[in-house]
Amino acid sequence: MRLRHIPGAAEAVAAHPLVFDEQAALRQKGRWHQAFAADNEAEPAEGLLPLHLEIGMGRGRFLLAAAAADPRINFLGLEKREEIVLQALERIKNKRQPANLRILWLDVCRLPEIFAPGEVEHIYLHFPDPWPKARHAKRRLTAPGFVAVYRAIMAPGGILTLKTDNAPLFAWSQETFAADQWQALRIEESIAQEETGIVSEYEGRYRRQGKPIYLAEWRIK
Image (cartoon, rainbow, N blue to C red):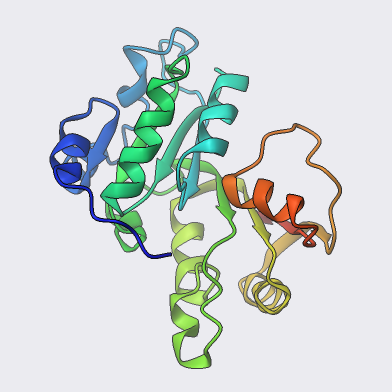
């Protein structure tokens, strides 16, 4: 997706209290619950609310709705492009801002540096770039290198959810997670309307276009 440059976007994103840039995120490693404790009244004193991470949150439609629906879960959305983060912040400003939502403004490759082992309980990959050319396979968010990273930062029994409209990526991803010994909980090639009604921008668009939606969920063994 080609983005229009927005003058001042980086400065606005960096100054926002919900946003953690790379340096701020590095300081939170192993204590992400503290990033929510002051605002989220549902956060127990011992800071044990589960942490869910959406990688590639886009304009934040899923993240905002999911956080509003369940204050007993802390949600982090990751996005590296400041123009997109700024649009997500505009969406949040126009809604009732959930206390259990924070944004990571950084590259996905930094995950091992900002999360301690076992810190994340659920990861969402919603319509990631399929990188269809074979020479770009390692860039796919379900490539073996990324799968190993997810295992390293997720809690025992942690779950990863993948949604995509791309059949080849869906099939390839099943192979990569199976090779890393994840347990397949759900593998569905054409899911009906999401039961919760909480969907990302891409899912809403593709459903309107009548495209099939592929869903997989895996658990760490």
